[in-house]
Image (cartoon, rainbow, N blue to C red; front, side):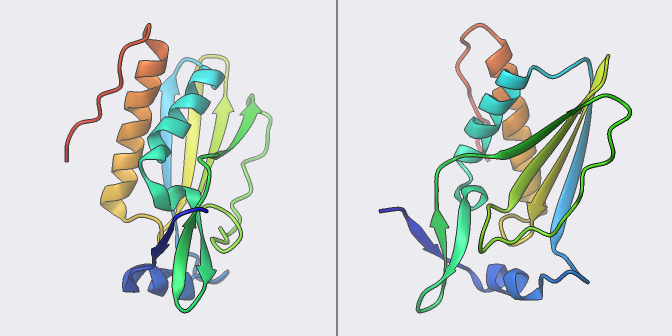
Amino acid sequence: MSETIPLTHFEELMLHQDSSAYPVSCFVRLRFEGRLVRAAFESAACVAIGSHPLLHAVVEKQKRYVWRVGDVAPKITWTDGDHQPEPEMRQLDITAEYGLRFFVRLYENRSDVLIQLHHACCDGIAIYQVVRDLMIAYAAELSDGAAIKFPSI
């Protein structure tokens, strides 16, 4: 049986205020010199969001709204090159999918990462904690077996 967590009042507000006219998505764009290593990035994304349960949960209506925590399986879309269209930024439906998406575009000598998050899943501070955890986990994936040590908050 998967874990459930009641939504806070703020999370429920974000759920109900989300609309196509006024989506409550937050975005972070990261730009890197060099090409990201796909396997290392995908593994790092799993590690990073593993400690953020709302980023791998969907909302269900029971007696009240709850998060149903699921498997850590981030949605990552990979594209290659300059001539690909920008990714389609559609609204996140947190009743049917996780409130997190990654779009990675690899160029010859650089990489762009666009992260889309639903505001019900995290606030501004949490967004930067996720990015920090992702970068630490990615660096650890590229090092030879070094242990991941996330800073205390």
